[in-house]
Length: 248
Image 1 (cartoon, one colour):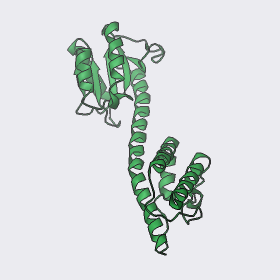
Image 2 (tube, rainbow, N blue to C red; image 1 turned 60 degrees about the horizontal axis):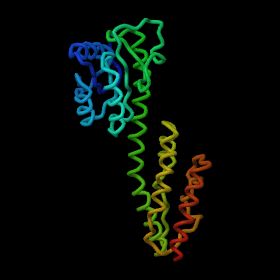
Image 3 (cartoon, rainbow, N blue to C red; image 1 turned 90 degrees about the vertical axis):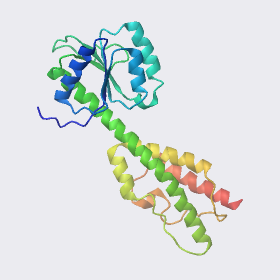
Image 4 (cartoon, rainbow, N blue to C red; image 1 turned 120 degrees about the vertical axis):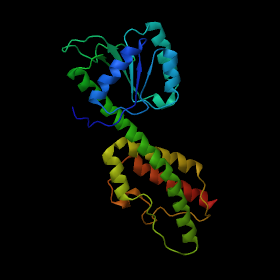
């Protein structure tokens, strides 16, 4: 079988090492496994491994004692980098007609059998696609977080140059950038404006001259992007706040 899936990092937890090894060998036939993929024989060992890396898929054998699993889930929530990991219960046998999501206990995203069948593969492909999308969203949100500082640096530069009588267009938030982000996932754009509003509340303008709300290129609506609702209100709040600060 040709493997065209993205590389995934897997942790297999099973008291018997051979069970984990068999599962990983089965997964390798369907997916590209990251070199950091590991196996563990105990809950304690698994948690130590999870603290060191970012895992996409955590596979737990059905023979792990229930009381140990309860503690595992409590401690797993404290490990920030693995909060979005998919947790799968691995059973010895599952009938093809069984609902692999419905049969999984609380805390698990689904169940697969140790020797992966086509039905198991389809479930994992679906869940991993969601995981990869979430990781990409998180990456892009971090990228736009870094852009916020540059945005406000340029905003202060506009204010300083206007004070000197120079004309400057505010171009940091380009329409192409906004369109690209919103097309991938609207939540990125929402997160951007939320963080932008928080940054605006903390940031003091460097120039004493207030910026007029009609400054060319400042309003989101002038970027040729159909902004509505929260995004337009955020820009209005930012500009008015900076104008008030400048008047002090």
